[in-house]
Length: 380
Ligand code: FAD
Ligand code: GLY
Image 1: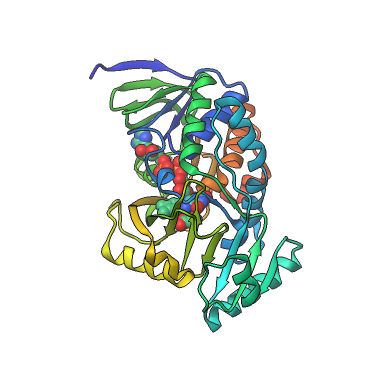
Image 2: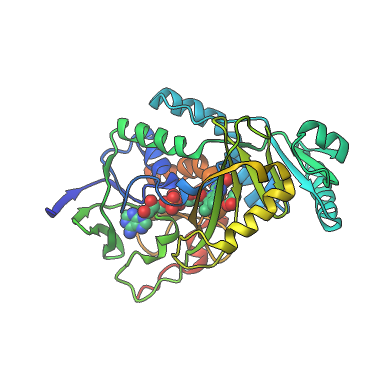
């Protein structure tokens, strides 16, 4: 392979949903000479594995700042989807039927009650149904259902079409994509980034955005240690063929979820496992997903299983995203740690990171997600 030496105004490391969205937002804000470097092919890791749910209300336990951040990102999705359609011609299939959350046990019913209480007190759109109504809304759900919530604003997108749309749009906006190229380290001089070292040569640059998902803390800096630890959390997924489709809503229980796609696929997820960088689908994983899926709808038992896969969610020690500039190294930014919500959080992440890089303006929204909360590096 020939070695290169290139220059860029901004280098984005990682071509998943986050790196692509950041690169697109940088280009839209007028950044020139943006280079995105991806080790493999675009969007082939966690972003490819995702279910595509935009479901902050179904997943949250309280109305904290993170929850507000998630809702804000969900609420800009219609405009984001329309812009991507215009730019790329690709429809990311934003599906707005809403999300149901089902209770089957006493403890589920309690959990559901708590969720209804705090979300209605916070003025959020939420509906509560007894079992009879729930079964009228979704006839395929189990007769064992005890109660249900509906989150009308929690929606879904086809995450693989989202990757294609982002890749297409970003390329049209002039971002150079270096795929099959691994970033091995950063070159820092006098406390500032001056270049990235890749498997194919150097790219000299004054700005780097680390968006390399679960691998973000493996990129070397010349400093003795970095305390930013992004851990891979494995999520396995099963895919069934449902023609005709068995449900209209995304359906959660406290133990799993079903996601109906318009083309007849039905996704069932997922596991949450500390398994290092191992992306195998395991017998135990399949068993737990299948058990949760059958509890939601026994009809799943009659469907053909067409695919299974696993992805590695990028997770910081406090489960929150890591976003923004690193105070100790000039020109170094992070956009990682999106854990269970990278698809949901992509548009807002792109906006805020691009604003920080291009306009040097840091939104106060980013305070709680700052990489400096971990004392990212020690400078001698
Ligand atoms: P990735 O998509 O993993 O991309 C990182 C990229 O960086 C990869 O392409 C990798 O090859 C590249 N890279 C790594 N190291 C280097 C290097 N040194 N040099 C160059 N390139 C490098 N989120 C939701 O919002 N909704 C959901 O419904 C949802 N469902 C999920 C279901 C499952 C089973 C899983 C596993 C995740 C789910 N998620 C969901 C989470 C979501 O997928 C992630 O949060 C999101 O994809 C993270 O995006 P990313 O771009 O940071 O990481
Ligand atoms: N947000 C769904 C998942 O991570 O499995």
